[in-house]
Image (tube, rainbow, N blue to C red; front, side, top):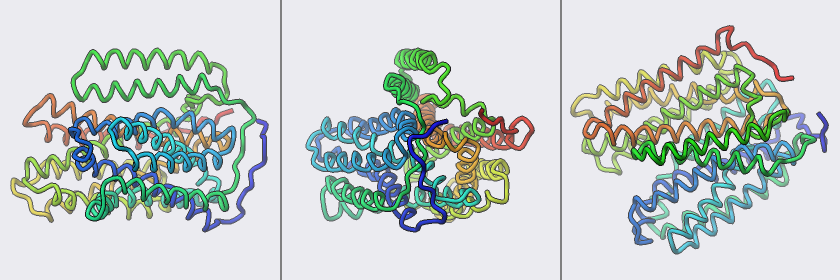
Length: 457
């Protein structure tokens, strides 16, 4: 393959580059939980119902998922650093626009812009980590990445509470945008350039890919609300767009939708493990507040504190499991981890009638430890099983697998609540047990001869 430029390989770890990269990850990740927590305040301020205001979250996910793979492919062509830096600029503009919004329509448009910026950062971060860290230490880099994501996501509710105690919701975005610009300043002076593929970007294929995932996400959302006609139309649209995309990219050695990477069995199984695992995570984080407030009688504030053991344990173990993956196969860690999550969820489903905080907390710690054992090693497996020249596409699929799983998990909760009425919460937890068991089983398959790598030509 030809290259437009040679990469500036870093002979040793550059602390400035790591700080710049992780600050960017914090800024993008914390925005997700900031908005989710602030929805009631935003709805009241704009005179909208919470059901209408939830669209500021939906539009964000739609734009992120639709943009991830095209931006990952663009990073391979023009350089991951350039796409990453441009994403921070777009994110900052979207943040300022969100903070200045005075209507739901304006806020939705601004959140869409934020989503595109976040997608650019998320799509290129794994490839940049692979560039910064020596091959023998890639697990540590991805472990740090997972740790930072976990901590940032956990900090969101606390930050929102602090901001809303002294200012309006607008400052959630107005304060976050300058941090993106600080991260940009650090990035421009520290991140190395990366390999560039000698091929052209295909705008039509990018549009088809984006529309396909938007239609698929619409279908998943509609399943949860039992809108079957909309599900059928959206799925048919997604399939049709997928067919057109496949025809468009037939014979392309590096397609935007990296089907070629799935010929590597380890990559394909790791991606499927990721989808099922993040289905569990999203399902649990949607259903736990309902379990704690509706069935167990805790206040929303108490529920938020009671859920903290899961992300706290996850953040700690993520920092350890990345290093463990240098010595233990990701298939083993993933199988043990997701099996542990399944056990933790069974224990949650069988809580005593009047549990105290300790009863709930230790069960969630088990779940968090299990998920932490899975997450970083699975990232390592995906990134290391893809050719270096396809790191951008691999990182894009890694992020897409996570978001697709989260969308399935949220839809599964909505479907259980719509279908089982009073038993919907318990049904959703048992669906989580099933998904965690499936995830552990898929991870274990990676240890068999079936998962022997099939290198790309």
